[in-house]
Length: 78
Length: 101
Image (tube, rainbow over all chains, first blue to last red; front, side):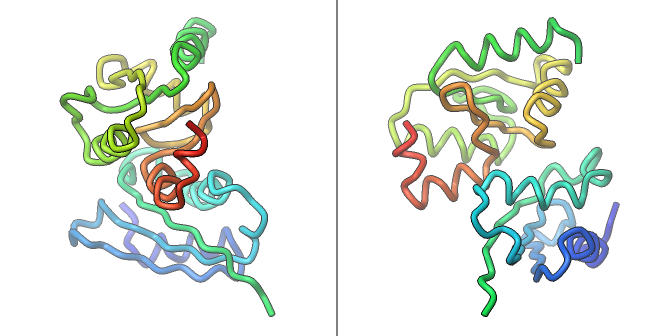
């Protein structure tokens, strides 16, 4: 199972320039929440934004990370 | 995914304006995320149909492929995939979910 740091790196690798914050409220490494701020979300529906995050974790999601909470924010450059 | 599963999923989605694939039933959700979506729909007072994916592994995996979304619960409105728990909550908070119903 990936560590929080690895998940963060995978998202950032998949969404270049994104800021990623990871929360583990229950300290169980399973019910984790990621907050992703990314300029590339601009103009995209919420569902697609979340899909973009899931795409970066495609393999990992097959087994454990069913409890991944996602929040996406658009970062407006300039 | 074989045609039979795809047809069953599509029939279910079209059987009601709001359709929720969840773990457990609205009366007895078996997962926190499913519970939270049911709670939102009840708060809005929206009538909906649901299917307990724990009762059928083929549907449980098939619906993930159908919507290209890796987790359950999955909320559908007017035959369209809307999202899982996070999105339902974000749409509810912004009032957009209510507008969709």
